[in-house]
Image (tube, rainbow, N blue to C red; front, side):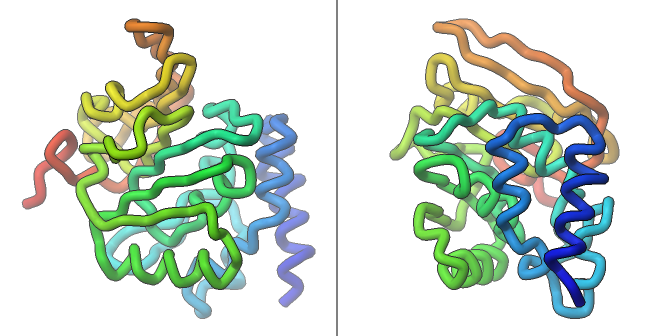
Length: 214
């Protein structure tokens, strides 16, 4: 399979074609081999315009949604970013192409280990992954210039709001377990300014400040 051609088509039709203009995001999406972050049996679908299943009932997000959420952070290089929900590691790799450091939290040990191994293999040495409750953030390395949550939450987790640097942005899907609104929240001193980006559907964010595990 010609993955390079498939990636270029994805970039033109799904990313640029849907209005993503941030050159840092476009460059990152053009570099990261998305097919490496899905099972071999799904690799021919890796650059298509929809999410794909990964281990543990989780998903790798649609390419456009990955690009859109990254663009919302308005990264310019040199930042420290927190990701809640490592999953396959694809979003972390996109962030790592732009930011200086990416701290990523995954609640599933199997996913965390697999993502860590693959990211190391692809030489994304600026990504640090831990297993834990992502809704609590990672206070040890706070504050963050950007925080991205790759699962749907009933509310904006309070610890993540507290760990956002002044001028930093938090991108999180908020709503019911079946449908959310993608929110972009910017800290201005002690105040938070929220903007609704679009409707979306993500797997539930499980944690102390998210959905409770059944």
